[in-house]
Image 1: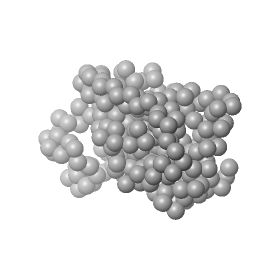
Image 2: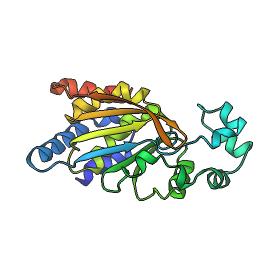
Image 3: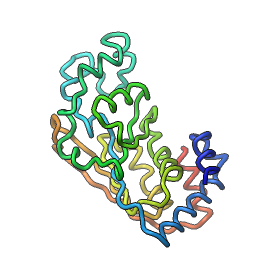
Image 4: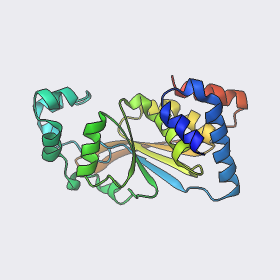
Length: 225
């Protein structure tokens, strides 16, 4: 078991050189899931604009003008250092009300894209550091990171995966592939917030389709595109 974990963790974005290892680990998880109980439903939450409202931050004109860009340089050069930014703008009462009761230590995962140090400070300030998390540099890395996390950290495949995110483009592109590989239903919810409440939730469900072994290899490669 440790061999798989070490290989995955030390070559996190090099799926091309580890296809056989990934497939073996995937089949092992499927066998365990078939003969034993499943892991239950895995609920996955993005952080900013999903689990946490940034409406208060967007009152700042400089941040509002650059809403869809990474704010790292702005925070460090124009406004505050990370600590001051998090202290000024991250409070537990801005966590999205509909989601706060759904976040559970044993069955939830935070999947967020931004600079690692900044995201960790937010998570700690919001008292969410008890929740397992994946932090990637860019949203397009989320599907592959989720796949590798389940392979390396789970003993069985979840019976269902439910994702909540305000920017779902890359997740939608890879969701059917993930569903096929894990043989599990994946539900993706595109979240629109109004302050710290969900204003709109658009749901798309992906049902697994049977694929041959050779196609599984192609599917793994496509996750890395």
